[in-house]
Amino acid sequence: MKKILVALIILGTGLISCKKGDIRGIDSDLGTIGSYLTMFQKVKTSIDPDHKTTDVASIIVGYHGTTVASIKLYVVKDQNTDSTSWTLIKTIPYPATGNATLTITAQEIADALYAGDLDQILPGDIYTIYNMIVTTDGRHFSTANTASTFESEPAYNMAMHWGIVLACPVDTPDKICQYLSGDFKVLEDEWSDYNPTNPANNTVTLYCKTTLPIDAGFTLDDNQFAMMMYPSATPDYPPGSTSINRQYMIATIASDGLAISYVTSAPDKRFMGTYVYSDGTTEDQGLKGTGEVSSCNGKGKVTLRTAFFYPGAPPDGDCCYEAIIIQL
Image (cartoon, rainbow, N blue to C red; front, side, top):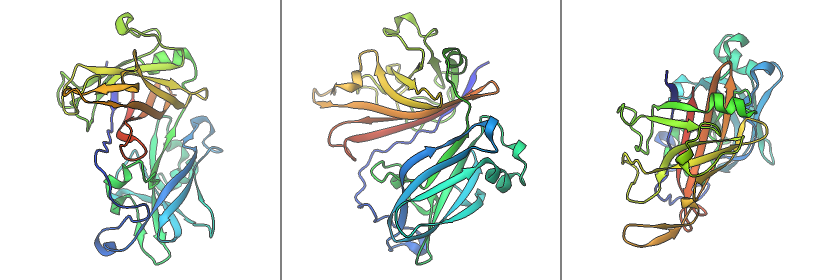
């Protein structure tokens, strides 16, 4: 039986001409300077299913734009940008100075979605918290009225929404090979080199140390897994192609068994040096990435966010982003 891959691909390709703090709302807020939250620190974005009564998920945020009076925290199972599907958890006043700390507990999620029944929150669940700004002049800003092009641009470092996963560590080699190895189905890919509707091109294989093919040309450490993904090894296979020329990406799992601490290309780090285009022009390019892993009750999940970048691209050399959520 094939394992299931739920993939969400975010592609940032264009320049954004607005300055920080110039995000503008829509409808009644059009033409006025709005506000958006910025991510200062991800303190903890997972809750251990075995410690649902004590674990606290938390991020620290700042803001740009019109002064923020408070932040409303909404929740939805998985994710849904339709604000009518969100359920309010609580409202946090924004401090007069400094940053705001946003906290969420499993009980608060249960109170909002399941009439307080904590047993409804299961290992492997993912919840999205949507932060709605209330400005001092009474206007509201959230993912619902902030253009997705702004949210996907890393220059803004937006924190308008964040995810909480009910996560158990993948902290031993046997767990990595059990949960992060095998064939997965791609359900969505906006890069379009994988085609979810085409059975001939909608699966991807994850490899651990013991399952990596010998002809891959490299080896994996105990705390690593690999997969084939875009960008391809040559510019002759752009997004939208069904290229067989994808390259291996290696993800390294941190000692806590929950975070992906480093992502690189392999075997010869083709995207860590000079990229030669078909017309002979070259650019120095690289790859970086972050993410999270989890396995609970025989189920595993991976969130992987990679950035392909080159000098001069917006912002600070970044270019194109890809985020994948993988579920067994």
